[in-house]
Image 1: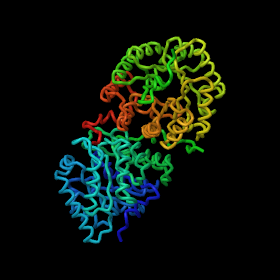
Image 2: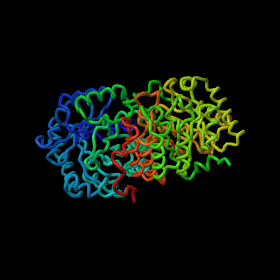
Image 3: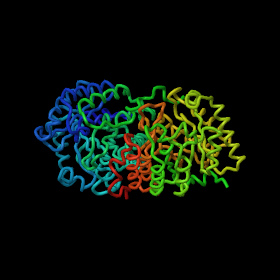
Image 4: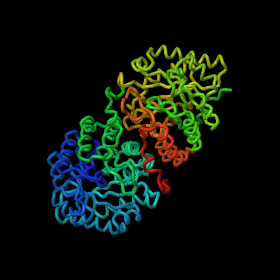
Length: 314
Length: 314
């Protein structure tokens, strides 16, 4: 039976999702072998991470870096974690549903300009395809959650500021299209904490108790501050990647996803017990350094290490 | 006549102090020439920065990198900005007062262990010396503000967690010793936003309306999030350095001060008009790259640039 979103993402604790294996590998010059991906999942799961974005269901001949997505899903299952796969159309969703992956992410942009640039179709068409994926899941009795990732939800490098009402309307349309939850993405790092907090309050008012994902890029250094603001407003699900792996084709040269290690430290400092072993997490970066030579590894915590002394004030 | 602290740091706007010329140069392998320091001040002041830590009054033969502190003070004066110089004892304060520098920073640690490690004397002795500096300022009719920087105010790499009451007691003792304002330093990056917010609330309750400085190191990636928390609680004076220059002998390999460029972007995103031109500020990094070859320049905003499009939501 299909779980409710709040069973996968309980309100009582934070869910920190490792997205490095998909979003993080989108733009890298090389990619890890399947064995290295397996080890990455195994080690990060052993450190306490319970949710992984595993890859994308795209034609393997066009996007070879995600050709082994089924093996990664198996690795996530083996680790007892929750897997999330990207599917950009009905064909991809069909393949994803067949694997029994826990969650399928579909994507639409908050702005027409970015939707056109990203997937070369208007938002209406993307929403119609999301509705098809939802219908397919229903027809096939699929157990995967469907999550609509809303890109450029906090500002767009192509069309500038994005009004909150516009984002909330897109959230509503995604739910009308049958998705179970949504993610709000600061794709190019335009957001500041006040803006994040305001949209999180809108989400909580409109959909009380329903989990939603905040997906932050640290393009302009606001990643951790934005995460702190969202946590304070009750958001409990965050995307991040080990060493901040990832970038954005619309923000060249930019830092990628918010850094998982730094996010875990923030969460603990804010009073959340993440269950994640920071030292083991930091140690897993070595695997990335080997698997992705020449790729920049971000994050400041890893350079300094976790505090040597107890850091909670008496 | 000596100004009141709130004339130098008005409550109605943020004061973002460039500390790269002192704190930032503490541990660098080389240092800029006097001409390069002058240009750094001139360009960053032209970009809109109004407060500069200029150097330290130490014996020039022992610490040659600060031997030109008087020339840097003159450059800050010339730019119409406010200068702040470090003085670790009465001799240094005598020299500093003679220059007419706007503010003298004296230092004491929140913990006995760090005070001993840093200046090889107990906190009581440091406080007695601070009282001497205050008396000297009084006797000589000096116009400089005296600011007590309290190191390790949010946790100590030598003795662990630091109780809020202990910090507030140290603040009180600094005021008893005659200082005009205090700075609370997260010297080794142990703090999280919740802790920062809590101590800022204590400061505001104990000394309503009196400016105080929050001095953050980004050692563990919390710098900008911590600044956001302090801003939200009413703190209006922040230390930062261009490109995050600086480090800490007690946190080897660590990132330095919070990055000025990122802090300015945060401030603007939070609704403060800083009057600082982000592009001109980012451009000034080139001077650092030339003056300090091989030194790591931190900060993510500079990599991506300020948002190309208007970023304030309608």
